[in-house]
Length: 544
Image (tube, rainbow, N blue to C red; front, side, top):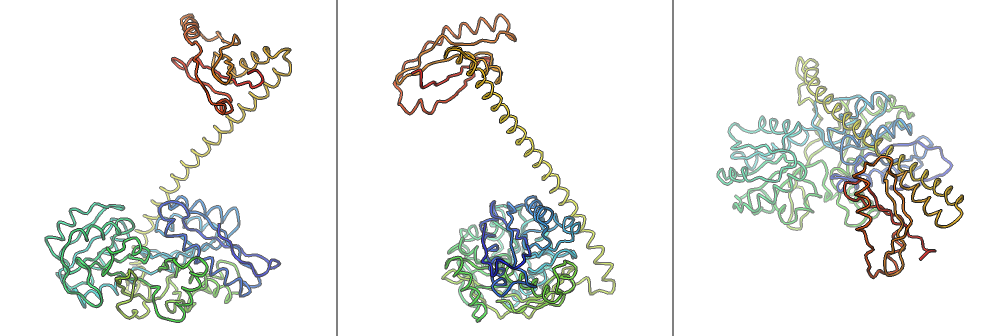
C-alpha cells in the first residue's frame, strides 16, 4: 500500500479509488502508474486539497485481469462508498465494469489508449484515441517509406481496428504483406520467412505485450540489412515502427531496440521546463531509475483534469463533475490536454526513435493537437448519429459478452473460495472438538495409561481412522508400547485379520535420531494398506 502526505489531519476527507495491477503480468508496468497518480493526489493535498477536503486514496489490486478489476471496483464503490476511480489498462477491464459504474453512478478515469467504438457517460477516456496515433504514424511513414511495407499485429479488437485504418491511409499498393498472430505469441518463424522474401523497406507493428518484445528479438536474429532510412540512427535490420513501443519496453529490449521507432503522446526526454520538472519530481520520490512513459504521464494528468472539473462545479457529485469536465484544459508536462464532449481528450503525438543510449527521442515535431474520433470520423457524416448507433451495437455486444464471461469467472472464483473457507472451518471445528474431547478424557483419567488410551480413542473416532497405537520414543529409537486401540465396528473378519498381521510385522525400527527430531514430531498419522488403518505416533516427553 502506498501512502500519501496529508496537509491537515483535521480536514474532512474525500475518498478516491486507484485501480492498477500490483500482482500478475501487468504489475511490473502498472506500479509506476499508481505512483504517478499518488504524486498528483499528494500535490493537490499539499496545495490545500479540494473544496476544503483532503483526498484519501484507496489502492486496489486488479491482479492483471478484468475479473480482478471488477471485484476491486465493486469493493471500492459498494463497500467504501467511493464514486471516483482512476485506472484500468485494458478494454476488457473497462468494458466489464460499465454496468457496475452505471448502477452506482460512479466515474472511471481511464488512462490507457482506447480502441474507440464506445462513449460511456461513466467513463472519461484520457489516453490516446486510435486516430490520434495511427494517423500521425501514417503521415510520417509516407514521407520515408511510401511503399513495400509489412504489417504485423495481434489478433483482437484493438489491432483489427488499427490495421484497417493504417491500410486505408497508405498509398495503394504500399502494403507488401500482412500477418496476424495470437495474443501472447512468441514464434514468428512464418512471418520472418515472409519478411526475408519480401525485404520490406519498413515494418509496422501493432503487436501487444510480450509478443511485441519477442518480435524485436526475432527480427534482429533475421539479420536482414537495413535500407537507408530517415534521420538519426539506422537499425541493424528493417526498421520497425511499433505503435505500442514504450520506454519500459526499450529498457527490456536493450540493443535490439536501437534504431527502431515508436510513437506516443509523451516522451520523457522532451526538453521543456514543465516536463523536466515533472520527471525530476517523480524520480526524486520513487528513484532515479524510474522509467516514465505515456502511461504515467496520463495517469498523473487525468487527476488534474478531474480536479479542475470539481473546482468548476464546486461539487463532488459525479453528474456535476461530468458536466463541468467538458472543455476542461490542463497544461500537462507534454502539452495542453482538452476534454471533448465525447469524453475523449484532444492531445498531441510524437514519432520517436531509440538512440544508441537506449533512450526514446522525438524525430518529428509534435503533431498539432488532434481531436479524438472514437467513431473514426463516422460521427461527422450526414447520417452520423445512425452510423455511430450501429457501430455502438457492435461494441455493446462485445461488452456484453466480455461482461458475461467476467461475471461467470468471478462467480466460479467465489464458489471455489467459499468451498475452501467451508473446508477450513470444518477442519478448525474438528480440531477444536478433538482437543476438547482429549482434554475431557485426560481430566477424567486416573492414570497416565488411561489418559493415553482415551486420547488414542478420541483421535481415532474424530479422524475416522479405526486403528491407533502409541509408540514411545527416546533419543535413539521408537519403542512400541502395549497401548493401542482398534475400532472393529465397521471392519470385517478379513480386515481384522489383516490388522493383526500388520501389528505383528511392525516391529520397532532402531535408528539414531537427532534430539531436534522429536521436538518436531507432535502428532502424525500415516496411511497403511488400503487406507483403512492409521498409525498414530504420540510424542509424550514426560514419559521418555
